Image: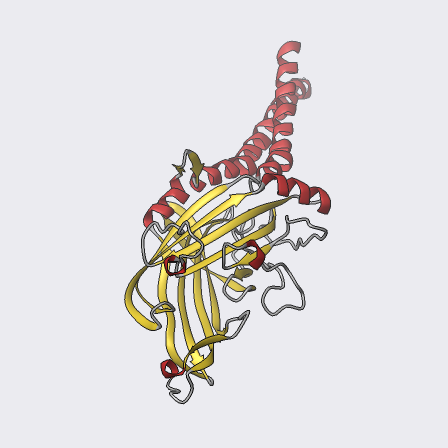
Length: 357
């Protein structure tokens, strides 16, 4: 073998060994972080639901519900908080609007309370960019970058974390995604209604639109919902005609199922079997909510294959998972095989003839 050929093969061998190390220990960690500027929209449908109408003060059956979620990253806040905490975090503002009409839009006038949606929840969450775990961030001194939760559009109603509060101590557990490299094990996942995290258990492998996903299930037993103020209803509604108005309690239970793409930790599909009641003196009197609500087919397809909404690319986790798989496994493995093979070939060619002589 000529000197030039030998040098080229040795150089290529060292190059491929270096590529293996760079792909696994530099490129993959750099890619396996949640994008700070991510925007996502999901639509969930809940056909044939039962709800309690606060406007009509009566229970309604056979109602079709639609929940629209918007998630929007705050890049400026993420950079600021990452620097303050000396760790990579992302900040997301989320809003979920649930109503019995499709494509609901808030009324322009604040006084039009009859046109408000059946349910509205807005949150700001701070998450570890790699694990998806919530991070407590509640700055003082007029800094509004901290986490919060609210059920109105009025900023004055936003609840900020308070360790002594029964309403909101702060986010905990996983909230919007699972870790990169999700494992077949139990995690804890945030429940917005109860404002705390509960265990969520791995159940099985499934496929959605040709994409392999892990299925997790979270069973939340029946319990009282936290209330900022007493919930009052006419006594006649709860079989107490002796009093014009009585304080009642809302109960809640849920079975949440999530379909997770394991390499990215993305939620491809979500489903909830919610059952909430209005209880009086310990007895359930009315059904507040009874519904099985899940991502619609278009949302699932977008999450798997990708699509544009408002000219912004969303979803596409099948391709993103393939990229991470290539960077973390196939490129390092191929390079680690090819590099030593080239080096070994040079050694054999150089040493072999001398041994035979």
